[in-house]
Image (tube, rainbow, N blue to C red; front, side):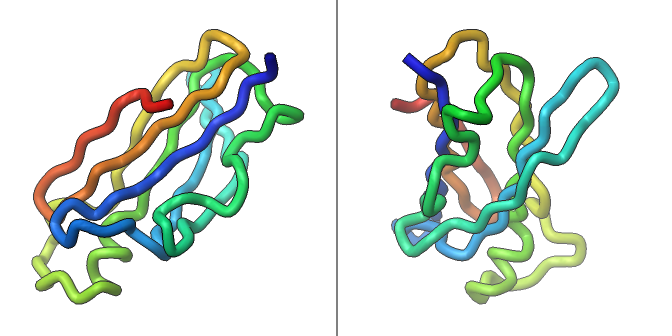
Length: 117
């Protein structure tokens, strides 16, 4: 089995997928943080393809950076200065060649994540 990475962002304050949210993917090696790609969620709050497909997959430490502040501004969430949640980094490890699903449940004042399926 080959590994790959996916995500899904749900806006729990609106009870709907978070569409149009920008996500950056980084690989972490020691003190080095390498940007691999930028993706944007679709109408279902998912990316149109795997964030890290099987032919690019390597075990190791990664970081997904969710640009929540821009998304919250765009959907009309009342502004704050500074916004409580702006950029949300999630650092995680992938130790086996299998499917890793890292969803984000988002609201203007909190978020959670888990290893999904």
